[in-house]
Length: 264
Ligand code: MG
Image (tube, rainbow, N blue to C red; front, side):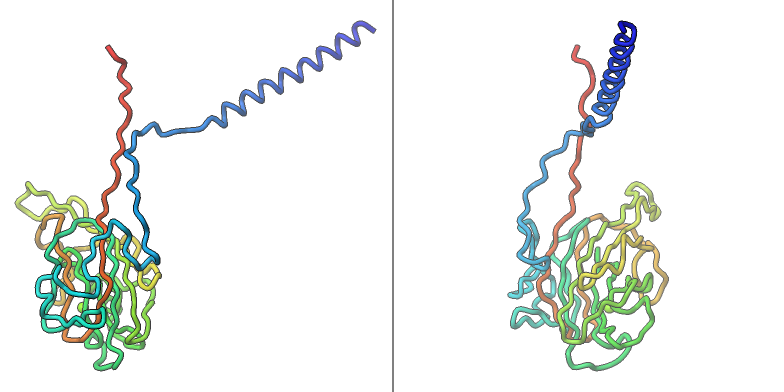
């Protein structure tokens, strides 16, 4: 009897031991990982009431009242909270590097012209990379020249245009190209990248710019330029309307690895 009881006790003891080891292993496996990187605390930003409204840290480029932030802004007509293209391009007085840009536009309600001649304008990032504005609602043209195209580089993935006269939105995320400042030639260190969301629809996802967007020559980085450049809105002879233009500069947080050297 004694040996049976000892055997039972040993068996029970083994089970307890096995479970204890399993428990320890599980606890070890579930230990929380932390990167250890020392991050600055992200700033608090109050979002706009809707995704179209500027967040608290946005730079307002046009709030419906005047185009005083733009060179040649006085050439365009401003009324009823929007601006209408007249006579010349307008260019921001300030320059920007990497940013998130919100812009609203409407092509003319009264449809005139066809192809590239209907509701043509454009948003020139860094003053030279055009996100096309065109009335592409039931209006055929070459695909890499239709609305929301990166002009002559890529059509939008889909045509998300609203009808002529209706307000439309672009939310553009732009990373400026970087050039080797020391090199006498145009040496691209990193190309520009563009993401475009048209009326809430992604139409370009981190598109790699092949260079400037030109009417009469292939895309290429023909010249180097500083990271910060102005934004230009195009006059193409069509009375396209704009409103609610704002921008947020993109500044990634910089984390630091902790100092692991032992104190002397
Ligand atoms: Mg254009």
